[in-house]
Image (tube, rainbow, N blue to C red; front, side, top):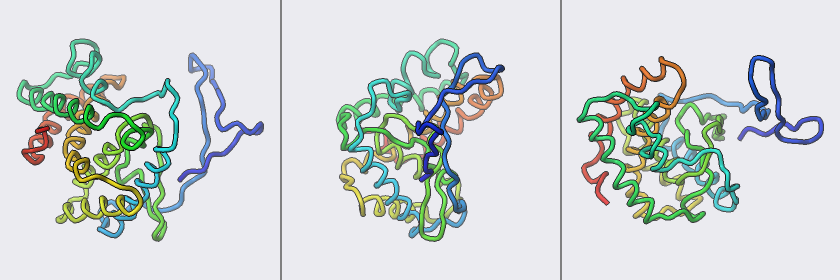
Length: 248
């Protein structure tokens, strides 16, 4: 993991500003993480190693007491609440009625699932929230994780969902084997109840909604246009998930 570099006075973050920015920003410095990305050469052994690292991160998170004002919360309110891309307002994303219906159908089962899971430290705490294959890299057998910019409060299943979902970009012929290896690696260091693992596809569906939300909330017309283009793709991906995905 990237090791923090302290300031001269030992602090791990400082407030810094420049004339072109209206207010000071919290700044941190981390050391470089060695290794390389292996997007198209991922295999079950490597995914098992990634799963073990994710499990280790979650073991740490389970013993961490997050502050009450945590900056990000990855939950159904962010995806479907009053300021979501589905609600009237500045973040609304134009999309076809059928695509809107598909994506909004994720809300009810996600709310039901999170109500069942609760928010205890065994299932919910600080997560990375963006663990795709360009945010973990390999140095020999060692796996390093970078880019904690989306770190916030969320379900551990969400981290696993992001990693699993992004495997689709590898064009692999054996995604099920990679997924099984990821979960096996995770279970080698941390329990994952079978009933919780069964919710993984639902959290994958939530990830597609999150990506759309991120684009819709980004400043600038280019990202807004990107959100409009992404909406039908997100809806198609959700429709392609197993039929039981949205059944709780």
